[in-house]
Structures are given as C-alpha cells and as structure tokens.
Length: 225
Image (tube, rainbow, N blue to C red; front, side, top):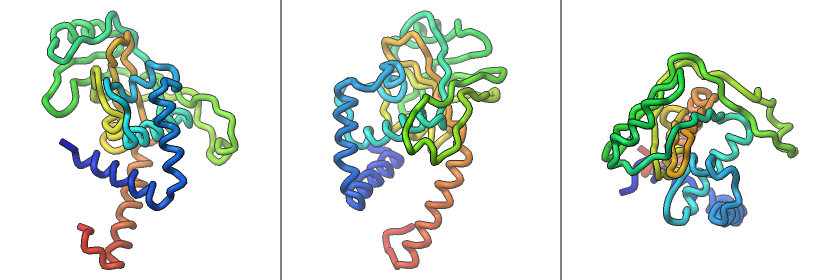
C-alpha cells in the first residue's frame, strides 16, 4: 500500500516531467545506468536502496537526489565494520548477535516492525563522518565547498536492514529526521547516512510549501487543504 510520503514523491516526479519534459530523458538515462550497475561503490548504492526487482522512475528520482547530496557533501557517511552480513528479519537473534559487538561508541538493536524501522543505531560520543566526494564541474562553483569531514553529536537514528527503497531512504534523510543507518544484505558494514543540513533544508522546504499553498489558494484551487 502506498504511503502518504510515497504519494507526495510520485506526484512531485510526475509534475516535474509535465512542467519540464526535458527532465524525463535524464531520469530514464539515470534509471538505465542504475539498472546496469554503473554507480559505484555498490555498497553505497545498496545503502541507498536494495531490492530484488528493477528500480522504477520514482525511486530513480529519489536516488538521484541522495547521490547528488552525497557528491555535494550535504550528506555524509560513516562506515561501521561488522562481523557478518544480516540474515532475514525473521532471524532476530542472529542479527542482534552481530549488532551486540559494534565498536565503541556505537550501540544498536534489531527490532523489526510490521511497518516502520528495523531498530536503531546510536553513538555515545561525537563521531566523524566523511563529507564531500571530489567533483570537478561548473556547478561546483555555485556553492561554497563543504569540509571533507564533519562531526555529529551523540544521538539515536533509525536502522534499516536488508531490502529497502530509495523512497524510504529519501524520506529519512530529507523529511523525517535527517539520518539513517543502513545494513544491506551481503554487506559487512553498517553505513550511516547523515544530512548535515537537514534542519536548514527542512525549514526552507516548509516555507516554500506554505508559499505554494497560499499561491494556490489565491488562484482558488479547490483541491488545496
């Protein structure tokens, strides 16, 4: 069943292609590259999404937003090496055995829910995350460079184990809480994805959304709530 956030994302992508048709070929080109396995490293791609069927155009848009944020240094990563790759959600004991031996200052618990996160990862002291991926294009000159590394204060963040969608990762990084810990299948790392500009971007998106709503009300749009 489609969630509210998924519907918002799908409406946004469809509107984007209607208002700016030139974006459609770009999205389809990115989708073909993803399906061909052209994005590397695979572990990072699996951290963004992992599924056993082909990615669709809506998830492609989410993936592209996350990949761009990683390249620009807005989203950073920290990699936690673990002793084994995860088993299925049904094997709670096995997965918790792996998580019980994380290096300091990390602690985690696997507790999958019918709908929701698979648990949490937390750290008890500041950690260092890797920031910008080096890029060389004219677009880089439009924004001031961000430091290559940055610190994140102690906190707890959601954990997603195994398969997940790019839409769900996008939701965590840009809508819900600005961070996510991913433990993909066939991986011996937990990858922390951390949006260092979450609060700033969330405030900007909220302000833009309110302005758009007011504009629609002014035009007498009966669909606006």
